[in-house]
Image 1 (cartoon, rainbow, N blue to C red):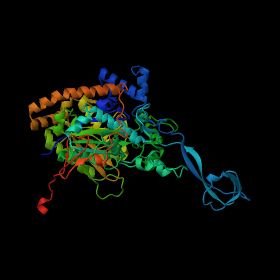
Image 2: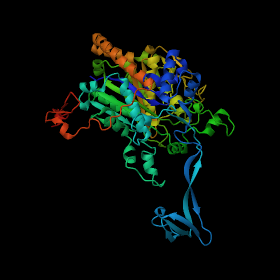
Image 3: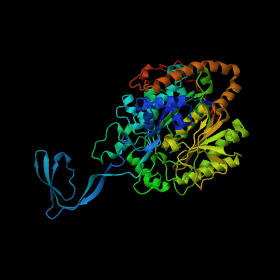
Image 4: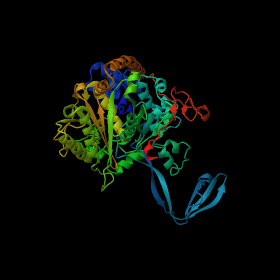
Length: 619
């Protein structure tokens, strides 16, 4: 009998703000919220962004302009003056060229045609007699100037001792802490209920840590005339978010790692967490991704592929004259006339529990993750072009939804969180996949959301953005519309789809299932079947009985109070991230063990070493 993986906590940081308590979701639909909820979200954003008097019209206009997708801000880089080196060849005039160079700066060995004439102190006089290739510092303007950026004024480095951490790891510390605090249950209470080997952590990034403090700095340092530091290489590993969570937040000793599947990476990690919970290998799993790709080099890489929305492309879409600034807030236009995706940064995490443990602890059940399906594309002409794998993942996800909630529920009470990148190719290919899935399963007017219109494309964290925002739909009964364009493009397949261009109010209890879709470069496709909290509740009542559910509801009242207390503190800027450096470090001599069991300090339950062979019939 499989254990049901339920989402007991979630948190993170995205261009919409803090994720816990649905604040990030509320930023997307803030104009459709009742005034008290909108006011609470503005105040939470104000604390996050260090904006005083968040109730004033001026402050709220500032927060609107400095969240979600917008023009790249100076906190990342000056997109009008990106430093680079122009390669030149200097040919000295007759008689050569004499220059003075610091002795410590002299190349060793000297380039051909260079000769040291004399030295004086720390300076050498050099004669250059032949052509010399040089790199001259210069500046250029980026063709791409829109990105989904964390709210301006929010600086994760200021919240804990960052010690030269890459931005993706700073965001990990904040986001994973937010998810853990959102539980409303002390981590020590959870540790007392599970064995040390029953906690899993799967977290990473699709592109590793590519800023100057990680792999980006390591690869560029020598070419920039700088020294590689001792931290850049280890901090650059793609699984480092999981390592940070284990070492500085949870103190976890269980399964860990990351799976990389380009833009589907989060769902790959979620698949591991779900498998661990369902099989009983783990009772708790923290799953997430953190991506910080807003660097000139990463943007230029995607731009060279023709994948990003450029200023020129946006001007062409809107009929603007050359030199006129486009509306960068509308850069991403899923399933509409568009010109490329919009890169973004985000860190999102969910805490999975097996349902029985969640009931024991009184944990809030935000949703249940039924399964994640992954399929490759098979043979391809181009590694970046789409194939047939996503048809398989969507078909399997819809089929499982039908098997769990029934055909009528799938047809009338489900919705899709599309990958929806905002590229001309995606609008055609993904819409065909969704439309065909709807046709085959008899779905009419299938509601389709595409959140990258607000948040941009956070690569490995993108599907985590989709999942966390889906929880907001069940909390508030709102399906976010795609507001960056008025209509679908003519080549979009939509016979059986309802691609939402306005926010849609629905009774949350009439939305039973969501399918999260993700497509990645190289043929990495994943689709996830997520069950609404009321559906999960019905399933648990059938398995555990009504009385057990009443007991859970009573326990959950205190848990919700603690979650609300954390939310209040975080919304007023009073909640610090968890960062336990050099805390509770264990050594081999701290363990108590024999051939039957192993005890770890800090855990009430021992690891059982009395194992049964899974291959008993073979020996």
